[in-house]
Length: 206
Image (cartoon, rainbow, N blue to C red):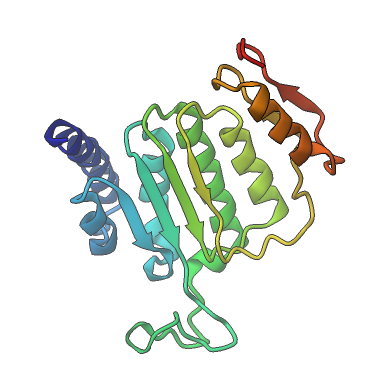
């Protein structure tokens, strides 16, 4: 356990040093909100606090990251209230966070695609309250398709709607399935009309 905690913090330190270097190149200050979570060995921050110019060094670092086990990016901005969900984080209507800009979310998803594809450590990806458009999701799924480690994906409070929300491929190779599991899977898929590929190879007990 101690070794895993040290490894996680070392990985975050590598992320932090590269992030700080890129901030220095553009003569900006690393964000306390980002640095605070990195001390815990993860990347977890409120995206509403970032200005447009703050995103470039962070996304460039995220794009090449291969070591962080958890990435959590949250937005609490509610345009109809003009605040970020609680009194101490008030944001007036005249200041819409940069994360609400479609170009910023697209660049974020591009960076996440590269990160998810290459990472050998990322297990948890949480995008909470972000306005993800179709092109954002298309970009993100390109990375998800290549991930070898991700086990938890959270898109809570992201108004993605029903469009394109369908399962087309399910890979269950070498999962230790038995005939009992196969029966349960068959029952679950009886009403599915979108699945194109189902792979259950290397499950000798099925």
